[in-house]
Image (cartoon, rainbow, N blue to C red; front, side):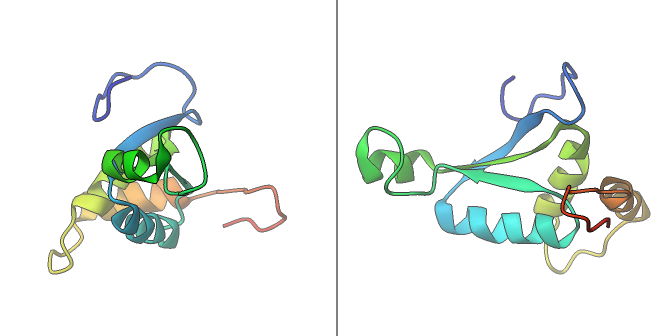
Amino acid sequence: MAPGSDAVTGSPDDPVELTRVSAGLADLLAGALRASGMPVTVVGVSPLAGDGGAALRYSEGAQLLVRRRDLAAARAIIERTDDAPISDAELAAQAEAAAGGDFGDGAVV
């Protein structure tokens, strides 16, 4: 599926690309998503992984992956500016994404 596509295929738990950004920004966005209770995976930031060398990996950016069911809420989180208030719809989407998260480590959020 192309980045930004809204086509729904597969399981709601399948990882989908949220965005591709610089390595530093990827870490910041991942922190914001995790703080909202959303699991996120950052791919492509290690200078020791993959082919093509560090310059190629950094020029392509880092990929942020979220669960398909969290995609809309994740987009709302990363697109919101610090000064913008959270709308009721965004707050509801974040609450729904964070509700009942069982991460298999005994802690249920």
